[in-house]
Length: 254
Image 1 (cartoon, one colour):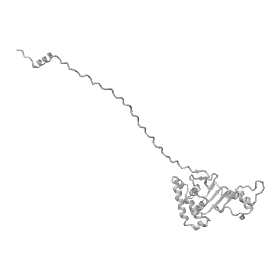
Image 2 (tube, helix red, strand yellow):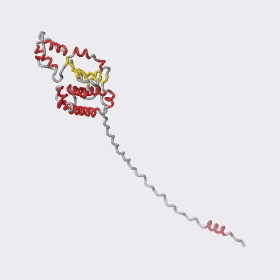
Image 3 (cartoon, helix red, strand yellow):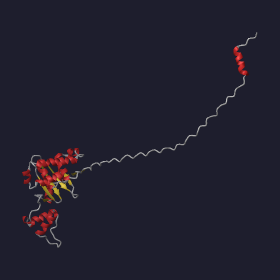
Image 4 (cartoon, rainbow, N blue to C red):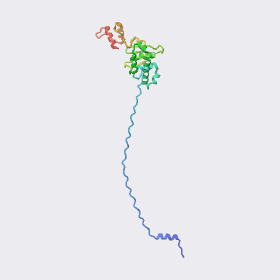
């Protein structure tokens, strides 16, 4: 009897059965992408402007003089003479604080020298106010600085000059000159012949009261002063000026 392999039978059965159609589901339609408008970038705020403090105006140093850049040039000329250029340069960035501290210290020293200040024919309260509160010192402030710190200075302004000679112990001396711009400069000794200045400039014995009463002068005295101040000895009519006229012209020059 013919025997069939079971596996072959199952295979034949599968071949004889009709093929079943399998419905394939249609493809899913994908919605088109939504166009998204680009979001504008937020504006970046500009960095705040940085305030730049300008560098100090450089001091004017020439072959024959030195002009400090600070406002109170007369004071700083004295300071350089007393302390030296190296100390001055070291304190350039905090010069305002150095100036105030030095002036206040000077006022304190003055209070221990009241009688000596009075002997200079100066009012101590006026000098204290000048050093402690004023923006600039004057000739009286310069004189007190010289006296307190034992410094000698020849001060030249216009065709006039005065001398504060107090360097017996320190041997510190110098020349300060006011130029045509009203700026004060520290002059180097080798750049100026003081003897020539004394011959050509009028010496002011007392800066607080430079001109004495008219009766203290002869006609020749006033003529000599006018020559040094470059004041004409003739009036508009070409005649020699009288003593009264000369005195008034000198007073106006002050």
